[in-house]
Image 1 (spheres, rainbow, N blue to C red):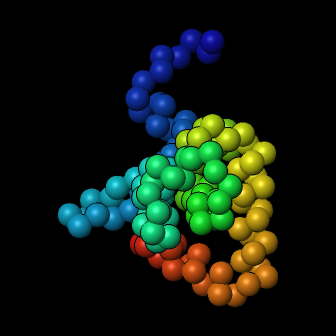
Image 2 (cartoon, helix red, strand yellow):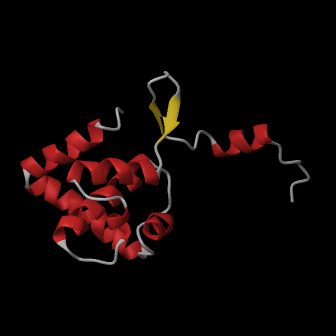
Image 3 (cartoon, helix red, strand yellow):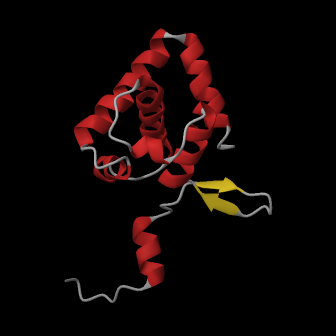
Length: 125
């Protein structure tokens, strides 16, 4: 359109740094992904990663799912649509509602906010 060839360097310059990264044991940085967030949140709540995508409203699963969606939005540059898709095909409105529910509960309940912060520290940011 502009008569400019798209090279990898030009693409990187236009996009900026799209990766949120974590340090690894080897000192290299590993990207924070939806998958890695799911693993950390599932482990923190003692459930399987697969249960986060399950079509259930059981609180022991739905609450960690909300928290995982919250972290996906906070720690990645993924779209609401993609986040919802990665959690069992939920729509963006469900993701927004989940994020707001976590934020509301964090404001209301200091113990809940502390548990969220403890999970956040698992990402070593």
